[in-house]
Image 1 (cartoon, rainbow, N blue to C red):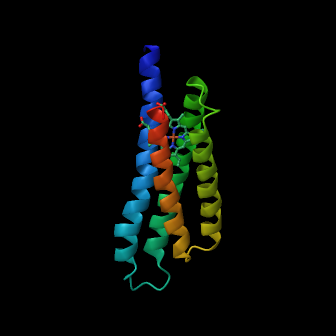
Image 2 (image 1 turned 30 degrees about the horizontal axis):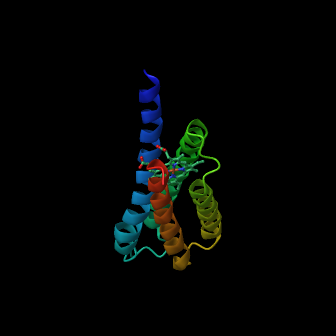
Image 3 (image 1 turned 90 degrees about the vertical axis):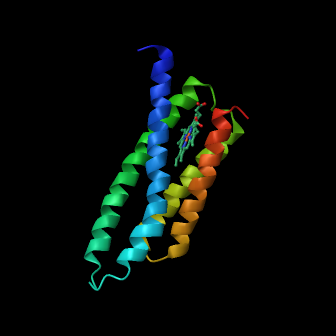
Length: 132
Ligand code: HEM
């Protein structure tokens, strides 16, 4: 495997994890929650089971994003980039909001804020890759 192929594979993993992280939030909010909200089960067993699996998947995706992002930032010498620093600040915000969300799962404004911040992170990621 050439060096070029290696870094392409790292970026590929970053983007795959990004697709899960952001796509998962969209599908969960647009399809799973509206459908399972009508569930007659007062315990919401199915909704909670789906939410738990989604949560573990998102945690794994975030781990891959941090690892591959860290590697690329070092390889491309981007740690001084203010775009990267804004991106990292938003990643920290998303992690903090997610921790609050675990304690207050019914606060829908939190989910909206996490999605919005994630979408801005994607925008900043595009800026980073195109060198702006
Ligand atoms: C929720 C977390 C994250 C999301 C959704 C995300 C998303 C993205 C996206 C969409 C790109 C554009 C790739 C392209 O157009 O080729 C990108 C690139 C990049 N990301 Fe992230 N990212 C996340 C976390 C991180 C973290 C934690 C770091 C650093 C520690 C990081 C460092 C980078 C770097 C250095 C690039 C540019 C790669 C290049 O120059 O080709 N990312 N990211």
